[in-house]
Length: 315
Image (tube, rainbow, N blue to C red; front, side, top):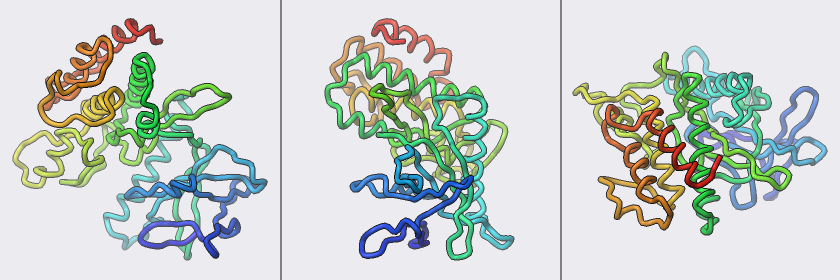
């Protein structure tokens, strides 16, 4: 591998990947890094890249590898680098904890380690590999029936509840971070991934005025933090479980309609053709309230989702 443009990239010779230059070893097994696909060669975020992983026999082991773009920081490293590296290590810790506790709706970590490039150690972890994400699935399947869409919402909501039950907030909920694998011809459970900015309710991970989450999916309090926290004028800047509920409301809207809601919502804006449309719109609108105090809580969502699931005969 090479370190280029502030990120790790795979090494090529003559336009072809060289296995020996893109290799890791774990527990005596050699693995080669590959592009995720010919169309989607890598997943580059602000903190890491993601590649496919195969063992040395060439068998597709259904793994993906996520590599931090920040090497282990020395004593004189900047606070920015220490924070980025620390968040990646925290992500590994949380994934291991959730796996040990049997949380099946969160992407499963397999093993982790470091890759040495130019005498610098970059942490990585290996996880189960999905076939698609929610964005590709929704936009690529225009004929999903209402029951399947309700089932998607229910599965993803259960994933968020698993996280919240352990005291964690995801804070980066968007279609790209919800994955699906097909196994044995059957549809597996939708799973949350990318816990890179996950936070615990008893810890403060963030810098003052830092942007937490993706533009377009930020909760009001996340936007307050970005725009007003440094001015210290008293707006709510705490990003917590209710912030996840706001992002989840946007995700539900995307599942049913294929776009994202903006501004004051009216039923006329919810133009998708589904039965029980009024009830689904009401739930989403309650999840997207500006005020955290007025925003839907878990008890309300449980009641709505339970009722909607019964109407669609979804377990």
